[in-house]
Length: 304
Image (cartoon, rainbow, N blue to C red; front, top):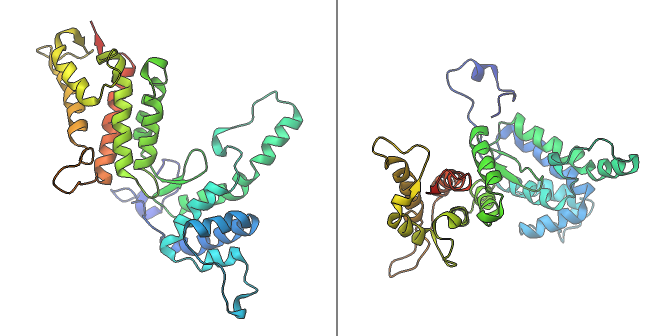
């Protein structure tokens, strides 16, 4: 929950903060169904595609239901446990003017400003009310920054670390580190998390960020080969906080890299059944990757 978000008095005065709610709380179900109904009626093609994506049947052979429109059926025939998935699908299909990331720029011609406002109307009429519902219900989920999906809420401090790392890595010599880190973040915190993808993208983010520092001449370098290189050239590497003996700082970086590399259980197949990463493992991997990307991209880890 953000600091400016309302919470009940009993939670404000209690020693512990209000716990975010997973799924669809009882108080959210009816207004969420109404939001789906309103949105689906305005965008019937999006409603039809959302139903196909969720494998829902919106028609019936019974004449009793002939007068029920697809929006009403999508809203009230959907099981409560699938309501967030339907909302997520509609967000992806309903047009957007950029959600909250494209404010009007001062000095634009009136006609251009009018076009932007018009294209942002779905955000104001549909995404805004949904966000308010999620906030008021204390939902674990929120609308993604681009307005096209639901994601799990991230602590603002954590989000700031990840965003800062992604911004610092946005330079040619760090390859696709920014892209991979953002993909890892989205996969780990999605409505339906994909921990295998999140972990894999986290490793790719670090590989991209560290490549120029550790193995710039090795075109097929991996996090594993970079670890081997780091151990060979320790004397040529430096970090701002070296530690009492002069080695603890670099050892901490090496330890994080090794933990990230060896913790990926789905990388290779063998005689035993492959175990896929769990969501908590993927979330930790993303946080490890964000710190490593920041360290390498900022030049904190450097060759002397």
